[in-house]
Length: 201
Image 1 (cartoon, rainbow, N blue to C red):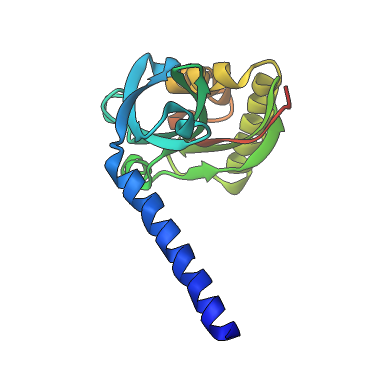
Image 2: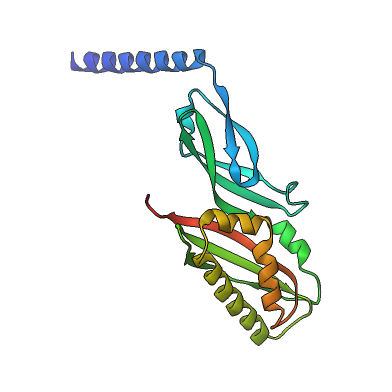
């Protein structure tokens, strides 16, 4: 008798799940506008209700906007009433773009470090390419100076400002001018910019 009872409960559970799936199938997903204030653009996401879009991560290809600089931006959604906004979480230059920028007879310099800005903990990965081959001492000097300047810049900036100035190439230009005193660069970029931890509101 016990076996029969268990099997009936399972059957009822399956029936209940089937009804839920059928009810969801009858409801059609809608498209909701998603604002990306950082680049003054709008995209769309599908959901049954707007509240389902809270905390989603989306990727946006910026290659065309940045005139061929192959970049992917990751954003996180936040629902405010009927409005869906986004905040940037990561900028990433694609490897094929970086490979194209490194020519024969040059050196590239990489680094990766975590630092604080005004409202979050971020990770910055600069990518530098020298105009000619240089010694290890010069590469080390470039790496150390870049880290020093980027940490100083981040400390005085908000997350939004950091992403905005990186997208516009402002910090890269300023950094390149400062590093020129050590050795001129053919490329000065932020390979990856990532929000590791946000400050609690």
